[in-house]
Image (cartoon, rainbow, N blue to C red):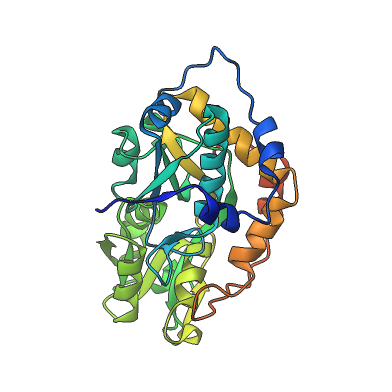
Length: 307
């Protein structure tokens, strides 16, 4: 893993230029003076906030054409960073980015390597034993990505075939749970990029993951028309930012920041930027409008699990 830091100054303001003014943002984030937050104290002491991200989870969190963190969840975290800057009265705050995988993200949060994980983390009861989640920022479903000419339409077509997913993801638990019933071979990649490579190279015939992530990987393929998303929804995934379970004051600030965005026009602009417009030099466009479930998550912010 490697860290790199950037100042939260002009560059960040340009990225967030379409959003609300700093004065309006700052006013919305007042917390009780007596609330103690180890994370905020660390940020104050070091002048740095450390954020986790993924390198291949487009459009939520990925490395862009220049290798820089980008995406919907990355921009949400930048807004939280600005809220922390305003609350702490820091004239200057640096953002340090740490690339994480689905497998090492929970240990990174538990051990304090990152203050906030900026990705499509699924809020689950099992994970809540170790970490905390923000209010949901998106909603997706777990399905299958296969080659268009594979003849695979559901799990019933997978007997004797190889199914891949990313180790430590919610796809992981479904692949393990259904293996005996459908008689397929299972393999586990380190991240979503490697999972797609196994599908692309023919070493796996199906890739199980959140449908939005599958759409992002398909859109970045050499020939997106060669792949289709199929099968029933195995589960509804409440996607959220992930943070320490031991710091409710920090979670409160994160949740208030997101709720403020959801209540205004900013979230629609952000969703359009990452889900409905061209991304990067290749002009990848997922053309995904927000579902009724996504709109409901914005209208009624909640960290409830829907397993």
